[in-house]
Length: 83
Image (cartoon, rainbow, N blue to C red):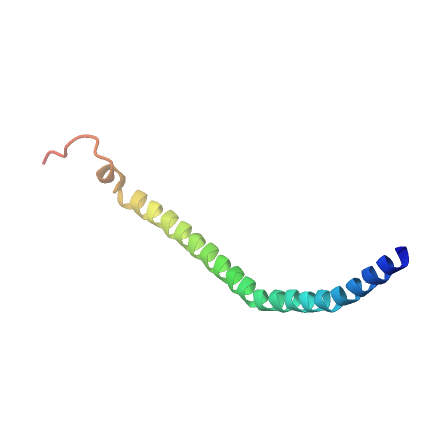
């Protein structure tokens, strides 16, 4: 009886092996398909980071221009300007 059980288990394990190979092939194919998506996302992240950097530079430049032209007092209403 034990030998019949071992033979059944062995046959069952032999049938599982090809299924595992197909599963492994499918997983590797999925990984290969995800690689371009991941690279594209990294590129977009870099672009967004660059845009934030440019915005920060523009903001600093506008601050310097406002200080140079004394536009700060007009931007922040402190009291009405009387002619």
